[in-house]
Image (cartoon, rainbow, N blue to C red; front, side, top):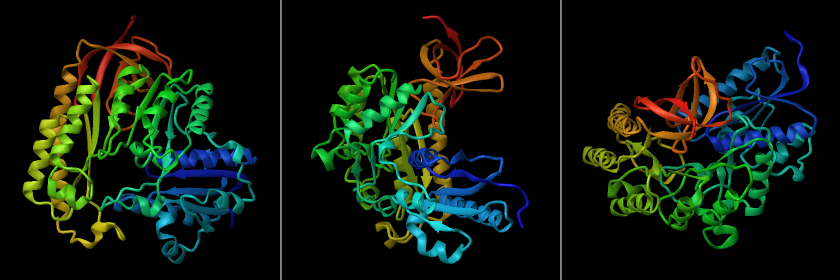
Length: 438
């Protein structure tokens, strides 16, 4: 029996996982809106008759969160608080038969490339003319721009190809058109994302075209920052660095997941690189683009990782001195190449090793930040939080990197605007400053 009146044409989309999933949800919502649905994203009002969950299936914790979210809304459906429940995304792509068997109170499960079928289930049409148009879930001044889908890399630990398929680049003209649409609607910063951004263009242009894409996007009027994420270290196209150095609106920032430094770990991970080549790549980045901020991601506790391998990683972090760093505990994923190896590093050891790496990184971050006191940076302000306006420099991406805090008691800045900020004090992961005229 229904406990409340539901809006019959209202859809609440719930997104789990990464920024690539977020873009998929935004595209889905754009299509629904064009089909005259009332659409919300992660609404707390609980007045939608339809809930669509866009799931993540990347590692154990993400899978568990997705399952718990599905179960939560399945109970809501049993109680009559929603009419229809649809599940899509990576977990659904990877485990659809199991999910259909175990959680039967879901109306339909769809994979990562089933958007037209999902819409058809709701009585909606997939509108091809809307390609590139979507409902942003981020503040309108920044937006993620997915330049490709899928991945052709053979990394042993990664289940992404199982869920996202082979690499498919989006045509350059389509991306430029989307960037222009975003810019007209107030977007000032583009965050380029993909499973592997450095592979861009190889499938459709038979050559790596990331540098050319950056040039084309940097010419879009209104786009003041372009930020590059998820670059793969093997085969990195050097011309990207030339473009980054020459174009003012391309942030001197690269997010490049390196995963490990030990040669035996890199070989087992099937990363296509070595310790020596990794150091050469980092040196090239810093030589070609002075002042560049490097962000990386590492894995703790991969099968066979010895204490010696762990110590090598600690020495690497100390020597490389990354501006930003994250680390994941290894997750043993079915149907990956590494699943055939023994998951022989205990969970508590994985956690201890990850914490040791982050302790080293925290000291490095504190050192790097302390050198910024007295310097002035261009800052894009994202929000007001408590007594502070909160923004970022060109060296910081949303959610994962440093933030700049300016007292809201002493000054005013409009959200989505740039301002010059002189840094007055720092912490490990925050900068404090005051707005200055420049």
